[in-house]
Length: 313
Image 1 (cartoon, rainbow, N blue to C red):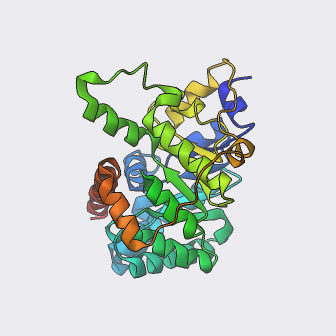
Image 2: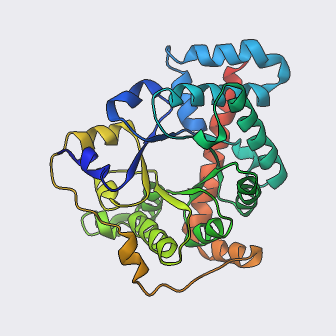
Image 3: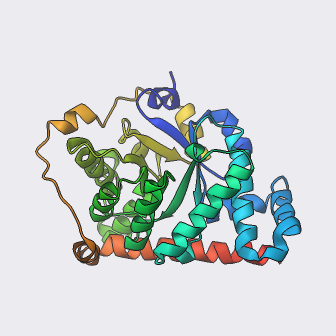
């Protein structure tokens, strides 16, 4: 059995791509997209017609509507190739506006419904800012399920659990990047690999906290830099993995043991933590890594959104 098949025994595998032609090879349950992945895809000849069609039919309604239509078009194509859910991202420029995020999410769900896709097959993605988490809480009460992304801290995970969001995407690789960059020449790659990787440790702490306290929010590790980060989180609820790393798992026949276990977490001594807005903002302020990576992630998605809009003419 290869490692991809072994991983699927205790973790739901999600494809992290906007390239729906790659999905069949790895048979993932779900798929995730973001502005960067969509931008990359529409620059390929086989996907350019999706953008051209959205502009031709809806250009007169403005770029926001063209973007919504493009995201839904990609989502619908992806859903033809997977049995589960697609995550579709709200404009990152709305990351600090709860009401606008809610309105945009409702519009995306409406457009999926027009295409015959029920809201049970869509997760609305938004950044794990305080405002984004509050938007998700409101949407969840309306039956619109959310994927809270750009999540780097325990405080963000705690607030998402309190908001009863469907799923969170803690970013393993970007946490790893920050610690490696800050350590500079002192970084010991071998000593900080797999279970000692700071990104892996972050996800493990969140997973164990949720399982200990009966928090139903799904944990989906994301943003992987190497196979070792993935195998160290085998047993996590879901893992969203790029096609490149999926292929490496599929080519590896080495044993893959389960690393995370809900029953084991329930036996751990983990205190319950809660946050209100003030304590959340203070916890984020105390966490330089999370604050910097959240801001950097939002800025990067905004840059790629601008590039997509430029391609709309």
